[in-house]
Image 1 (cartoon, helix red, strand yellow):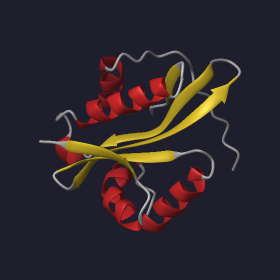
Image 2 (tube, rainbow, N blue to C red; image 1 turned 90 degrees about the vertical axis):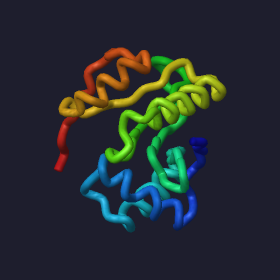
Image 3 (tube, rainbow, N blue to C red; image 1 turned 90 degrees about the horizontal axis):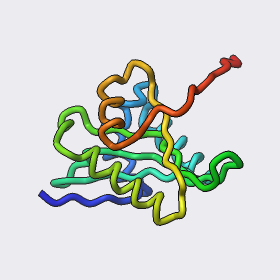
Length: 142
């Protein structure tokens, strides 16, 4: 079955993407999701969807950034495959698209953080050739 990958921008696309993103970010409602993505887009964030048979199967949110410590890099904020169709290659296809975009944009590395409890996601990232390189520290402020 053929699929396509596109940037989520229209109201219809946000509505169609919401049932997938809420699996990763359950605190969101549709309006919060749309408003937050639009806000983040002013800061360089882009959200892409993989669609197959008219259904959004996977989403990836990313930023292209420049750092002193690594140079140009892609940071993936969000990466999720619809739980109903996991292990069908959608995540791998979307990850490959993101990797290819990062390479085409001159990025030297692709980064993402993943919650400690997401063991299945970690196995996926290892299969994609990713390594654990850093600790990510957080200081709650509120």
